[in-house]
Image (cartoon, rainbow, N blue to C red):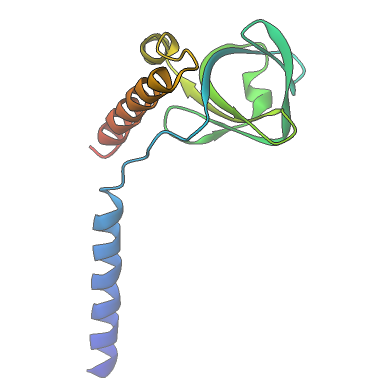
Length: 136
């Protein structure tokens, strides 16, 4: 009987933690910028808004479902994104957007604090909608 009680409590605690995890809403990462990134035929060479750049070693590219995508799978593609640089100035983290999402956030980032605040709010709304869609 004692073993059964421990097993039942363990099962209940796992179920409770899974239920709590479903309410998690991902927030927009800080210090990101919108950009159209064109991945060359030979990654890590990329073009960010028409200027040549590079992905950092170990760069993380996340798709619309927040799953990692290898840079080689994106070779030759042009992508709507928000991205973050590492301390060396290389593009380190990239989140893919669709054209509609990029249209919403692309024009709202102009470098001033109010523009950045609006940009972050819109990005949070986009990711909240994605999370709600995935939890259905």
